[in-house]
Length: 312
Image (cartoon, helix red, strand yellow):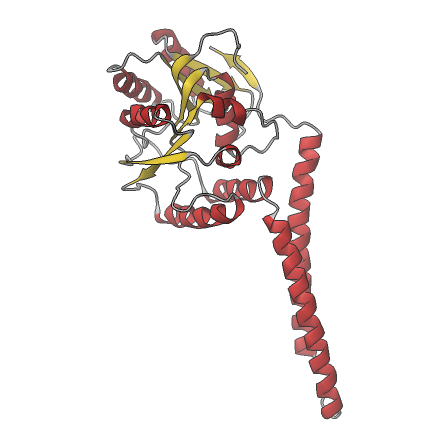
């Protein structure tokens, strides 16, 4: 947590950084331009998530050149949401803006998000008018949106974008969570539903490729599904009850068929099919339970959410 004796600034901008050494100077320049027309005191917090390139070297240089830049270097890679939590833990702004490091989020929209929070909303998300993501990412986002509505009780029509603003009090409530598997949007929706949405133009990535591949997207989805809802456990229970009922019906039909037609041979195909079905569902349910137990084990053993190695 930031020093409580430090005066709050007006706006904190938190940016998780990974493989963005060439983009960072442009990002800082555009943020400076976007905030130049306001009297807001602001800070730009760049969280280096153990990036394998020279991102930290660039952050240190930018911090020397610009008083508003603050760099945080994490000891190991912890993922976007945990890196965001590290940035939030150091933010002192009355309004805290979270954005990506690839300039697909236009810095020109920062003040619009800031104004929405100051008008009385706890959180303001952005909705992309012209998404520049690949087709599989758009399909994945659609699926994630539907699942989040069930698991997180997400308001209908709200897109959980990574470009958003929080009231400072909400941000400081979010960082109270000390579990190892942070999902920022789940934490936000646990705290408030006083949410606003603005539309923005989604930009093309300035350089390189996005860091979220299919594996990381699935990992993030599992984090959302098992860290903030017991719905998967209830689904496993429901599947077990349905399977039990169907099994009883199948047994009754087999017995009845044997009584009516004693000359029929035993059905090996149907037997194997039932065994495979039951075995698959049992494995699925055990996997769901194991996921919860594993996360509980790591939290009980105080697996760190992040470790800050250095702050500029």
